[in-house]
Length: 164
Image (cartoon, rainbow, N blue to C red; front, top):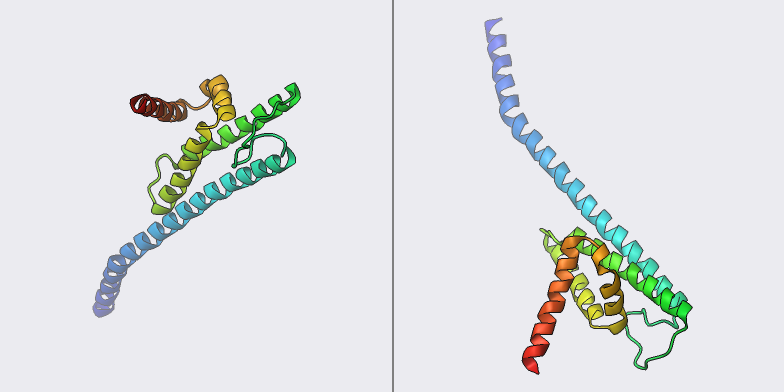
């Protein structure tokens, strides 16, 4: 009976010694998988909104709201100006969402995705109609996002003044 008790005690030590690291490994792996799933969900939700925006661009192709700007300036009716501004505000909201989702990017994939969003935001800030919408409504967005875009605009203004 004493021998059985010693074997059971030895077995419980072995299970404890091996079981705890195994449980930690399984827990950490599950946490990583959940984090990756959340990151994909973030990407997927943002992608859905971007696709909706592109559909609006197709629906209102007479407005200067697509990624490639119109070369010739056109005159818009008051209704078209409001439509253009509203769609540009949707674009700004999507940019804000991307900023908030990716600003603290830790993984390489998120950093790469953020670089694309950052490039697109800066390209849009160079467009007159977008800048007008931003100047009129920018104060209503997340303060860190506002500082970020206004910081880019300040740097750009500084660089333009230096080159003149």
